[in-house]
Image 1 (spheres, helix red, strand yellow):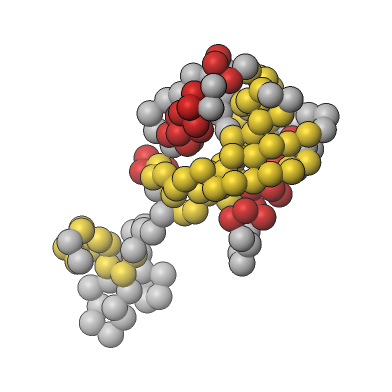
Image 2 (cartoon, rainbow, N blue to C red; image 1 turned 90 degrees about the horizontal axis):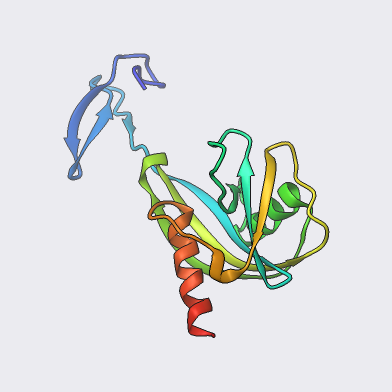
Length: 161
């Protein structure tokens, strides 16, 4: 952001509340760009005793991850994850339990992740072009974003075996 959305004055960077923030220097304005993170939901989908990972058309070829998406205005996160699963995979969700809340700083997001149990025939929407159904012990995690949720989910699976 270069200009104040309220008065069009060029923004400056200054310390405020312990962080450097962009703000409007015009005394009569007072605009502060807080750059708050965007909430995102993600689903660890269990289907037929396997984990579903998907490939988004905009991702690198070998990258598979969790179904995820943005909340709509006034939408409950649990409802959002059920909606995203249905929209992206056409699956029906029978169980959606909060798994955890995770920072995804490189995207300025907060991920609200759920463990879900689903059924149905997988039909990908236009955002996705491939998927993998993996045995739980074949799932590999990564150390950022939805990978942290997957790691926590996998730890619960290892405790239950």
